[in-house]
Length: 440
Ligand code: XUL
Ligand code: CO
Image (cartoon, rainbow, N blue to C red):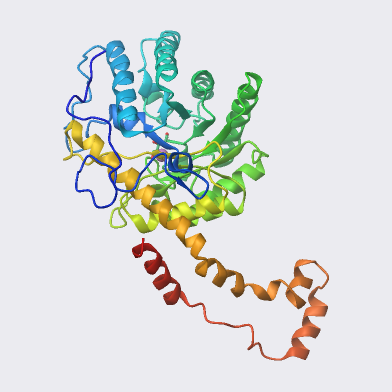
């Protein structure tokens, strides 16, 4: 096995005053902050699809980056991808990776042949894991690119397609378990509709739940103890995706009794498409005990599609890490860079520049979030804003000691509300946020 990135060594941490583009300015993997090393707080993961396979192809042009890894045959290329991926992870101090089955090994003539070739590659990945210590964050199945999935996979009108989907997911779960993954993702790539004129939404959603129940039952039967994740996205590729946002997915999970096995994999760019902030989606997940993992990237609010940019917005990353810390940190999840370098950033070095940008952004976000919590001004303000619920009538409402009659009597006696109506102080809080961010 040759070295793919000969002119790039292990990326060092050089601190914020460094001007070396191939060094971390904020990510110091083993530095302990808020009780544990940064690498354990952040649990960075490489996405196999973008990094090892994405060559910049878009609907207006062919690829610009060479992602053949020097091999023209699919089997040899799949193996070379493994070598290159482990080299990238090692040089960037990335501890985890994520894959779709077909990113690791493509489809061949039959499902049996495809499965056999996937086994060979996962054997090889397992060997490399043993040598390097790199771990699998989560696996998933690519049930959206092949033409058989044109009308959906678990929500296809065809029962045969449903069966094929189940077979593919069974194998992807086996691969995930084999590689020690503690997460399995459902992203409903074509689970949605283009028009209601041809769609039985009730049956499609029931079927999606049937598929998920089968997945849980099978995975538990082969000893999988990790989490299942749903990754919400409101649109693209379909006009309407069923897993629209966290709140919609929560309704689905609860309706079908899936809420104990499934958590959320929140992607920043998908939040933007749902017209939510990234923090909103994380907060909804945290509040409902379904915060699981994160696809770290960013979109562009001026564009209506999933640009999957490497995250560089420190403000958003800080608010994200604030939610992560408040949720008690990651358990099985982590920060997967579901992100790709721009089509014009096509050289091998750009892979490293992109990851350094994304990792430093989240490292800085973590440092700021820790400071926000230590500083305490924002948390204290929120606590005081809700202090009327800790005693008196507020506490009686929470303790269910009062109903409408008692509250009417209280309101009549008390008269107009004046004393518990403080200012929301939004601008003051935004200014505190800036003060914390820029005094680091
Ligand atoms: C697509 C997307 C996927 C999932 C995994 O928008 O985010 O790459 O993360 O299937
Ligand atoms: Co994603």
